[in-house]
Length: 203
Image 1 (cartoon, rainbow, N blue to C red):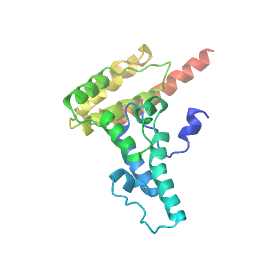
Image 2 (cartoon, one colour; image 1 turned 180 degrees about the vertical axis):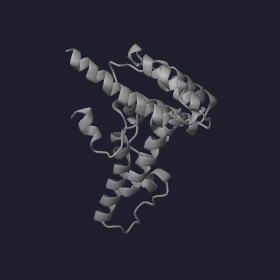
Image 3 (cartoon, rainbow, N blue to C red; image 1 turned 120 degrees about the vertical axis):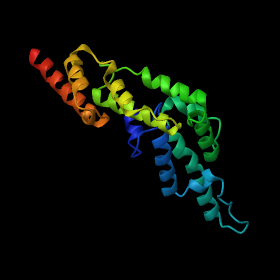
Image 4 (tube, rainbow, N blue to C red; image 1 turned 135 degrees about the vertical axis):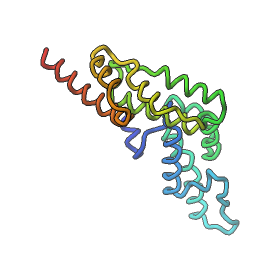
């Protein structure tokens, strides 16, 4: 099964390098919808001694689902973090320990990753790059630090290919109230479309 086919099981992206905060909330809601969230909280009570075989089976299936749902919602390269358990709560806590931005070292790593991000024209579209910058900034916010919006805007246009030079110079001169992440992202996507159209006409 392809990665895209696997991802289609969920209405949200799998856990990756830069979406832990939003993905954690999405996974919580999904586990609640499946009746498995109490296993993650550790408050789900075992079946009583007089429970029927059917009730026991339903309980075990929900318990297993609390783990399999989490496992299937993680990008393959991170599944190794939780393959040594079949318990949903243990898997949840393991991912939290690895991704929760709760230390200065983690914050430093996030900030360094943010400011070293570069647009790779061969690997991503300008829209995906812009989204990546916004998501990395959100991670830093969740770690308890806020990067000024103007620096986020600068990061969006710092390392662009030469084709974007004219637009970048224009963006440096626009009014302060227009120098926003949303506006710059829109301008970059529009410029990307113009560049692609120009390249097609040359062929």
